[in-house]
Length: 355
Image (cartoon, rainbow, N blue to C red; front, side, top):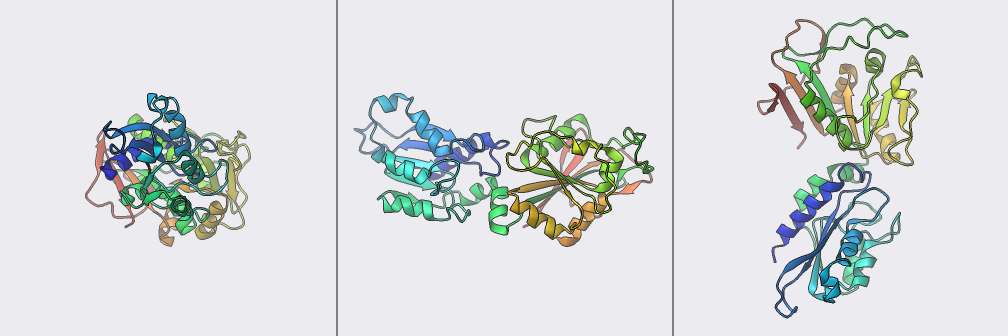
């Protein structure tokens, strides 16, 4: 039996819940008939499932539910002769749903193969031990690095005790993120004055990043000058939690960042403002306590440079418009972009990651 093939299928399934399961991890499950001891019926997939939305059934629950509606269930397939593949260790605790390890035991599955152990201290090996105590064969660590990449945000929250940090900005070919604009607080003169750098297609990628991360953060100056809504409007997914700093108490409650709408993440307020404590390590610690597993920082330069100075970031995405030259303006953060990039609409998209 090709364990890696089925775990990779679990990863494919898990990604279907990408924009809706945070702060839970993305998980996929595949139930496979082993092929031996089944009267030579052969190896085959009996059912699949994935974690579809936060607060609802986990991948294993959905996989077994789907199995109940198949011809294999009618044929009374012996699950002791089957293997359940799961990209992440089955949970062992009561949360919003009962323990999946308990469900697997009750179903009588003979073998479980997982991609990786769950770093959540409420699970962290306990799910595997619960299965082994019930006499189920358990194999772990199949395609582990691929499974870790799938849930890098979830892992960062539980292993590093902070959100996964993504920095993003767009700049001109000569290294500016905006032209010179007058700070006209209290008026709307500046709203149409921002320099348009992104194309419609690269703007979609920005909104994809918003859907991938639980929170989005901008600095005081960005709120004053651009009055952004910080919503996900050009991509499928939830609106991120909006974060800003206001150490001098100068932001107006009329700013669109404060639009009072329900949070797309139950239990977490839709807008978080830091006033007294605005140092980056403290902000990350506080966001982690709130259960926020990732934050996309969209600017401006002062905020991003402060974060770069701390060294606490995980990814940087920079869009460069080579043909757009303005000669003067607000300088982009000074970092080496390297030689590798993707190209969309003539714009260069650089991605930097920490090792």
